Amino acid sequence: MSRLFNPGEVIVRREILDGREWIVYPVQVAADDGVTLATYLHRGTRLTFGGGDFRWGVHPWAAFDPHWQSDGVLQLQRAGDAYSVWARWSDGEFEGWYVNFQEPLRRTGRGYDTLDQELDLWIPGDGSPYRWKDVDEFEERERGGGFTAEEAAGVRAAAREVEALIASGDCWWEAWRDWTPPVEWDVPAPVALEGAQAGTAA
Image (cartoon, rainbow, N blue to C red; front, side):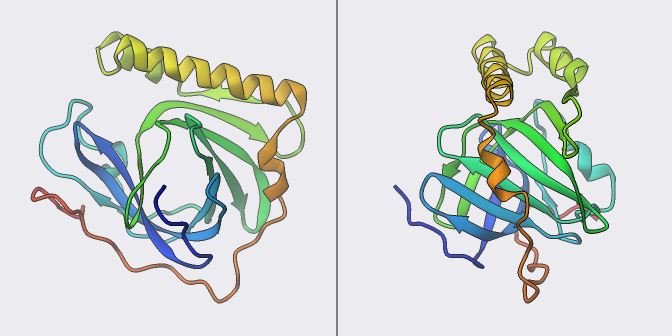
């Protein structure tokens, strides 16, 4: 296993599509025990997008200001899970949990790699029913060949897993509900792509 990351350390989250970097940005480590990696995406973080042709096209965020514009987000991911859980706040108030279905994280020397797989789930913090997001987009990408049959089946299996956790009350991410970033933390510097086709959106 790659080394554990230290609390406060700035590491790099990369989404890899077609073997190349699709989007890259720095996050700050809240905790890492080798199973659960908790990182914080600061508001104002610079996002870097890969250039060239991708089978999914350019990253959809590339059309906007290339900075994370929402409040900071705590990103929780466990080894082997095909999803991460993001704690979302608005003006300092906890709003809920955003489940992002993605490839299981792969640790690297400077952070980790994954790939968003379109489907999402929103779990309101007030206990009201969860709701699915981007279902049509996921199914359209599947129909268009953007996912293999195996990849699409994996996303659906992960979705069933999360539904089962919610139904049983075994929501491991709830242990992080009251977490707040240390006051001394600040927005990390941008990170560059490693590939020759690197390019920061402007």
